[in-house]
Each structure stands twice: as structure tokens, then as C-alpha cells.
Length: 340
Image (cartoon, rainbow, N blue to C red):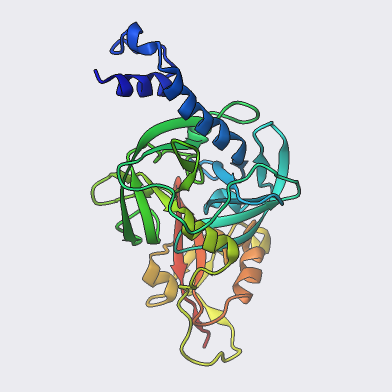
């Protein structure tokens, strides 16, 4: 076995329990071990655990990276950020409430803010840190291995390809439209999204992307959102891909075509009773008996909350609606029409 590969395996698996690697090789080259150890030691304090809302089988946790000394955190967009008690846990175990500042639906990114000084953070710029074939390390809270001071998981792989992807709803689990790095680290696990991907010398390559799963092939993609896109997102300079109405706003209320169950009054859960034929809701696939969880960025506790959120909609302006269908949470981009 190649000595360098054996040393890398010893690092990834802790140097124990590898019958395929001889004890001779597990006496690792100090220079190589120290090289990767510095990268991991650099990434860990700059990567955080995030905990929030959980619905059904949808996990209520994720990972994020610190991107400023003022408590800004970039992570993957998700339902777990739609609750009222989103928390960020720093490397030393400090737990702080977090608020969502901004989201980007095309790249599935979210910017959070905690009230704390964070001197250890990743500098974001538009210079690529790695090339095709370079070793990369992914740091994340995969499967919630850490809740307080426990170390995050670390996996080793290679940057395979830089490409552009347009993942569309119905064919894939989520929407994504942008550049990305394909990596062969196994990062498509619950909780991994938002983790740091760094080079072997500790330079940030990008952030582990939100899970993309093909409904046609039942396969998942391991990828990272490049650092240059994260920098633009933090600066607020990403192009707005929201589809706007080509007509002037009429001032009239918006219509989705959703009718909720009337039994139980305004304090009852926001279950869909029926969907009007040909309406925006019908076109995106919302069904009777779906439970509306969020609308236009607002978490709904009951039918009254749905009515309030619906009044904030603008005809012709795309928004996001999340529904629970059995044990699955489904996210739709929907453009309301003018109410007649």
C-alpha cells in the first residue's frame, strides 16, 4: 500500500481499527500528520453547530461557518431555521440564540447573526483555494455527532470537478442554480450542510451544500458551494433570480388558490381543505390534507397565522411555501396571482 495513502487513512480513522493498514504504516509520518492536523485545528473553531425546529422525520440541526468577527454565520437554508428558537453552539460549547438575516433560494444559503465576538472566522474572498485533484477536508456535524464541546466529524476527499448545476424540483430533492465543486467526501448526510470544506493546509474552499437527491436515480450529490459565491452572498451582491411580475402592482390582494379547513376556527392547524383548479398552488403540486408549515418566510402555528402571512404576498412576486405531507416536508416556490 502506498505509504502516503496509508498515512492519510490513519489520520481519517484515528490510526486504530484498520486491519488493512499495517502497524508499520500507522507509525505515521510526523510531517504529514502535522500538516493535516493543523488544517483540522484551524477549521474546528471556525465551524459551528446549529439547532432549530424539527418536524416529523426532518432533522432539526445543521452546521455553519463563521464568516466575520461580529458573529455572522453562513449555513444551508432549511426548515430547521424557520422556528422561534434557533441556536448556534460554538466550538467551546457556548450556546447563543441566532436570528436569520438573509436567505438565497437559488444557492440554498442562509445568513445568521449571533450577538457575540467571534475572532476565529473564515475570511471570504473570490480567489479559489483549490483546484481539481487537490485534497480537501470536510468538517461538519453529520448525524449530530456533537451537541456541545464534542468535536465535529472530519472526512477526507478530493476536489473532483468545478461545474454549474441547475437542479429542479420534482427531479431533485431541492432547487439549486449556480456553480459548485463536486467532491468525493461523503457529505450528503443529515446535519452536514453548512460545514466547512478546506484544503489540506486549512484554506477555505467552500461550504458543504444542502442535500441534493435525485428522485429518478435515488442518488445523492456531494458538493460544496464555492467560497467566491459565499463572499457575494455575505456582501449582498448575488444576482436576484426571483421572478418578478412584468406588470405594475395593482394594490389588490394576492391569491394562491388554497382553502383551509374551516372546522376548529382560526386557531386550528393550517391544513389544506382544497386547492382550486388551475391556481398557483395546483400548478406547483400542493394537495388537500397538506399542512402549511411556513409561508413567505413566516412560521405558521395555525390558520390565523396563514391569513396574516397571505396578506403580505404580492401578486406576481415569487415566494416560498413549505408543507408537511405525511412524514415529509416539501418546499415549493410559488408565484401568487391577483385575487379577483
